[in-house]
Image (tube, rainbow, N blue to C red; front, side, top):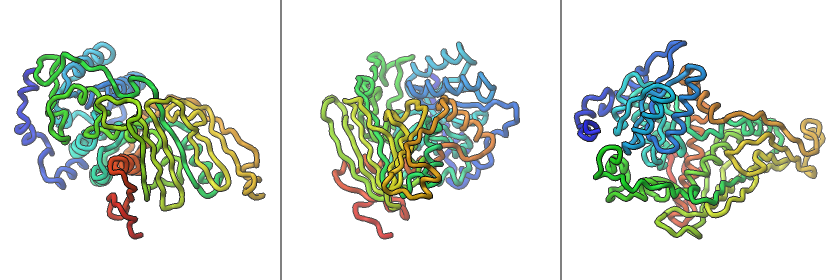
Amino acid sequence: MSSQKDFNRRDFIKGAAGVGAALGARRAFARQSGRVLGANDRINVAIIGAGGRGSYVGAEFAKIGKEDNSCQIVAVCDVYQRRVTKNKEYFAKNYSPVDGYLDYREVISRKDIDAVIVATPDHWHAKIALAAMDAGKDVYCEKPMVHTIEEVRQMIDTVRETKRVVQVGSQTTSAQQWWQAKKLIADGAIGHMLMSQGSYHRNSREGEWNWPIDETAGPDKSGDDYIDWKMFLGPAPKRPYDPDRFFRFRKYWDYSGGIATDLFFHVAAPLNICWPQPQYPYKVMAGGGIYVFKDEREVPDTFHLVAEYAQGHSVVLTSSMANSQHIPGLIRGHLGTIIMVDHGMFEAVTDHITLKPERRTIDAAYVEKFGKQEKIVPIEKQDSMAAHIRNFLSCIRTREKPTLDVETAARAQVLITMAVMSYRQGRVLYFDEKNFKVVTKPPRV
């Protein structure tokens, strides 16, 4: 513990391979580095961000690795020492011993590590993912992919330049209903796509991001109680230590986008899977407010967005942390509607999707191909989390594009980040795709 607290970051930056060098040199290094994996080699994975989500995802990787010998967790990193200690104990007991770190840069400097799981607070996602790619690592990055529009572009460019594999961790995109819906739409089952809708609702104390606070922990403590608050803040504004901000970070704009980035990503990403091609929004507007939970939070407890797309369709998303009733997830077209999630819970299991033709607008050719009655399309049940991880591990070996690749995730990310900006600024915003920036007036086409 003391050796990590005394770790000289300046010396580390100077000595770590590829870190601190010129951008081009780092990325040339990334293309050439990375272990050459043999058929029987296990992929060495490290967890960066070992809170509840990171610990869970790391355990899922380890479970899959134990089943098929595809991977193993070899290191865990978090700015809170207790989380590091707990994970070391867990993996030693259930799988194999792992090394523990407080500084992510020590992890990505290890040449034996092939991939990292990034499950930190949102404001660190891009910074760590970019550094990992520059160091020759593949990345499983929890949603949201990034925290700002500028970081979206950086992620796209870095994946293209380094040729690293990045899977964004919205595991629901590996569920089969989205791909079945995509095929139906591509085959003409709904005609011109008009509007997509979805929701994500909760009503519980934990669902409001009021996670437990360890009162004994802090930056002035030692042993397992130590928190590296300066590292936690990272690129965020400097502030005195605040346990609510540390343990309940999703309630604050500095580290999260609230409902939009935590929940709507699980709706926007699969919609982009369904559509004929992933699309950036043209126009975004958002509203809502803190209607019920008037505590320390900055982010709204009720939030909704409307977005328009240049290809001629709209998206409507709604959510509240104070009401648990969803609306069906569906895509409307001129000739038909596809209901992908009739119970409305995008991350929950469904065993079917439904095609509903618009009887008054379909013609004989449509009827011959799809019929005129409501059609139930069965979906095989599967563990989407396991499927998402297995897809990532497979792509590390084949170097193919994963299920939720950076460019597909970017379309969802721009939508939800613009919605946050629209809510906070109180105005309609537009996306200038050519110059990759958000503007307040319609961009010239």
